[in-house]
Image 1: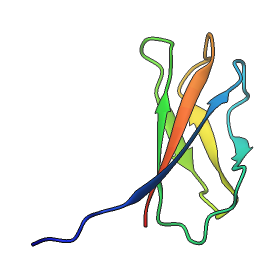
Image 2: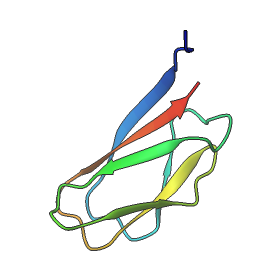
Image 3: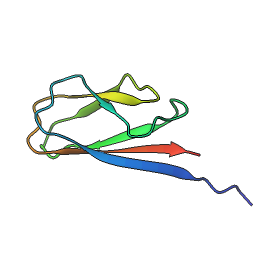
Image 4: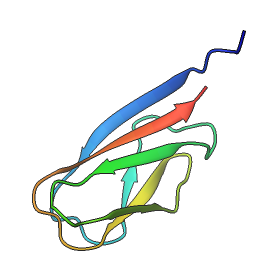
Length: 78
């Protein structure tokens, strides 16, 4: 029998019109850098890139201006 994987998930939104290289702070700091961030961008053709991860947040840049609100989800295996 294989072990069950447990994940913690936190989510939020990124206000529109962020400047490139904006840093987002997580509500609760994480214990390490082993987490993934998924960013849902509402503007067709715009790519989000997550960089500079820390235990308290991350930096996200966009390939072009974002119209609307982008949402993010942080996944961390327990």
